[in-house]
Length: 143
Image 1 (cartoon, rainbow, N blue to C red):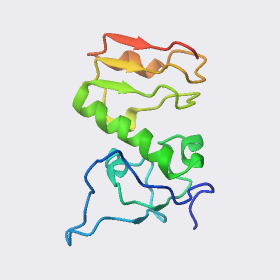
Image 2 (cartoon, rainbow, N blue to C red):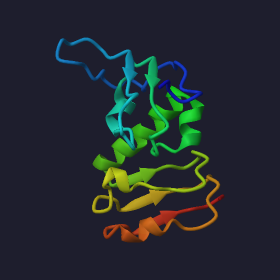
Image 3 (spheres, rainbow, N blue to C red):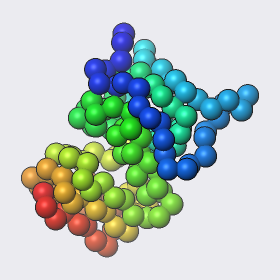
């Protein structure tokens, strides 16, 4: 099957991040993940700075469908923010136009001290964040 509508080629730029490479040392420019049972894209996809095209199926639940419809640059921004959270203990998903949050796929529950969900379209505090044992603050302004 083909990829989701809206998964068009993007700039692939990631603010100076080094390219992830295959064993041959060639930067990945095209990534096809169709025909799988994948439910989420791993954060490292956000670091593939040479990536121009991604093809995925409707089985992907994370990033959320509206992020995927925005195309590759927004998908990579979302995934980079998740990847950064693993190193900083701070997850910033502000301004991503999220109406819900499901981060269980990324196993951040023991890592996060803070979560910024401000400037989204959330109508409730995501119950999931209460499972995060180390979480000390949540910013949900301007939802």
